[in-house]
Amino acid sequence: MQIEPIGRVRNAAEEKTEFEALVSEIEVFPEFAEGLYRIEESHELLILFIFDRSTSYEMQVHPRGDLGNPEVGVFASRSPNRPNFIGVTQVELVRREGNLLTVKGLDALNGTPVIDIKPAVRRDQADTSHK
Image (cartoon, rainbow, N blue to C red; front, side, top):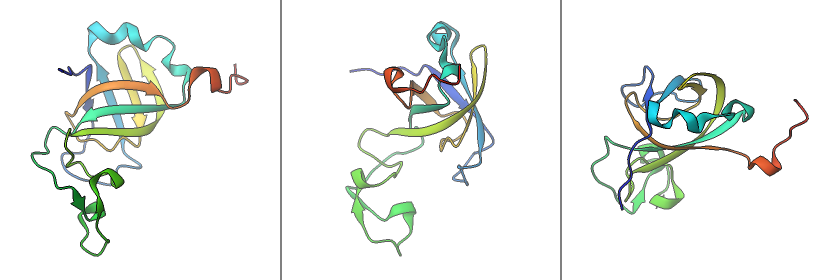
């Protein structure tokens, strides 16, 4: 199996930071830009990305790396150190300009490879009354 990035994260986060208020851009590569058609109809998106700076993992971790937090299994945490180094975050879509998505709340560092984008709510379940 091979997974190729469809884009990259652009933001000011070069290391772990307070991501909830962070505004990021996702640059979707031109060959995938057509896939953004009507994405602005979704206000919340799921961004799947690769923790490309992670190099190892443990099956039990202290959440947020804080030894004061009781250990949990890696799959019960949001640790970036995971067997497949895949991250997912639900974000607010602020705007779309061509192949650039501006989002709020993405917990990924600058340059992180994006592997997929999905609406947070299925299309058939979305509230379309705002149109």
